[in-house]
Structures are given as structure tokens and as C-alpha cells.
Length: 118
Ligand SMILES: [Zn+2]
Image 1 (tube, rainbow, N blue to C red):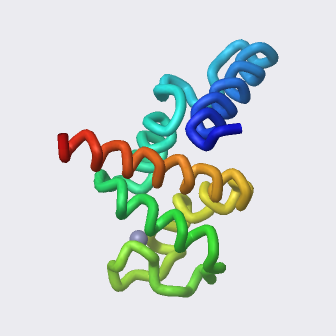
Image 2 (image 1 turned 90 degrees about the vertical axis):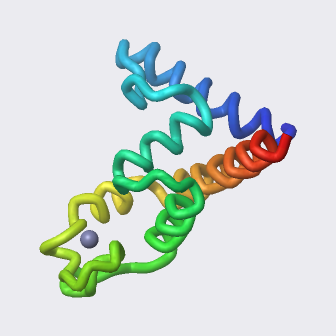
Image 3 (image 1 turned 45 degrees about the vertical axis):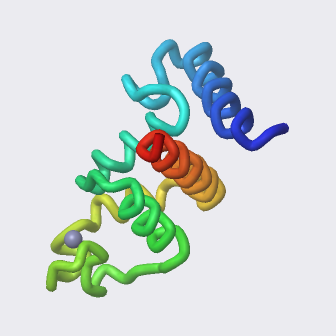
């Protein structure tokens, strides 16, 4: 399957299946596809820049943190007193799902860059 189709169609169909069984959308009111994925993580991380979202998501998906480690947000605060809840939400998602989301975000980032340069 071409990459752009896989990135847009697969989550749409997954959400559709979820809707059919649960009678609500898996992602609430988020837009379909990559824009919705970006919006989800922007709200979760409380950050706007897509590159920052991609970097943080890649970091959290590959590093195991301890409750007493300094928080990933850069404040001199232990994780357990800072963004532990955010950390746990990300850890509850599957690694494969996050890898997929990172791909979608990178694709969207490229698309946004192209739009800017026109
Ligand atoms: Zn923090």
C-alpha cells in the first residue's frame, strides 16, 4: 500500500471499526488522520511545534524513565512530581502505535513545510 494511503486510510478504518462497536469515535472530536494525531499529542504535551512533539514522542518511546528521574520537560523536578501522568498515558499506548504516530507526524511535518514554501 502507498505510504500516504496507509497513513490516512488505516487510522480512518480503525476509527470506523471502533465507532461501529462503541458508537463513539476513538479519538473524540479529533480530525481524522495525521492532523488528529498531531492535535492529540499537542494537547497531551501542551506544546505546539510539530518537531518538538515528534522529538518528545521518539524519546518517550525509546527511553524507560524512573519516577525519581528528572522530568523530560526540562524543569528541575522529579518525574513523579511533574509529568508522571503524561508519561503514563504514553506508556499505556503500544510502542508500535507510537511508531506509527511518529511516521504520520513526520509525513504531516513534510506536508506543512511544502505548503509553507509554495
Ligand atoms: Zn515535567
